[in-house]
Amino acid sequence: MLTKVLPATVEAATRPESVPAKHLLPSLPYEPAALEPGIDAHTMKLHHGKHHASYVDKLNQALQTFPELQGRSANWLLLNLLKVPKEIRTAVRHNAGGHVNHSLYWRAMSPAGGGAPTGQLADAIARDFGSMEMFKAKFVEAGEALFGSGWVWLVGSPSKEGQLQVLTTLGHDNPMSQGHYPILVNDVWEHAYYLKHQNRRPDFLNGWWSVANWHEASRRYEQCRHSSREDWESEGKAGNA
Ligand code: MN3
Image 1 (cartoon, rainbow, N blue to C red):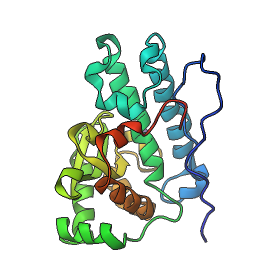
Image 2: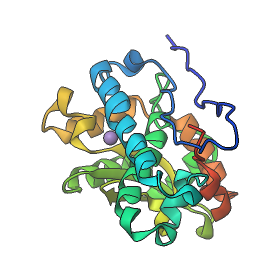
Image 3: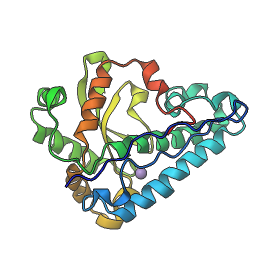
């Protein structure tokens, strides 16, 4: 049975010009229990309502005394960290990163997920990894091998006609900083799986394919090949989810 998928974006509330834009926690695009049994509702509620919410709060706090940065998107902040004042640069890196990565993560999963991609993304996976099974093995292996907290990504390189790679980032770093466009992502911080899987990260990584959202990944792959850095920077604007 397909669970109804809720709209993925929240419209910016109308606000007077004088009130600074704030980054907002996006709604989950489905109910917290919708990914069961792949991901349990308790983990989803804490992960979204506590962890992600705290990155959004801390990002807004860091920007409080820098009105010139308040209209910038979270992506812009990550891609232009050297233009962010030193005293808040680390806080912005961690919390804009946490906000952007989790916003991608919720949409990388779906109650209607699982299976395999079709079309151009399927062709590109076969071209760049040999097969879907070889891609999955590489993604799981990279996630297992990451020491500590971080993320495992399927990314595309617009400068190389959408060539795909699996890579990992530490903390809340995002591969866009290195010129790679995120196609699919899994969160390998312990908070993403500890309640259900405890220390068994490989179980989580292998089970995660049942919720992987190939529809969204295909959309992002298409976008990757036709996007510029300016497009990347405009995603995640303050006042929008
Ligand atoms: Mn997380």
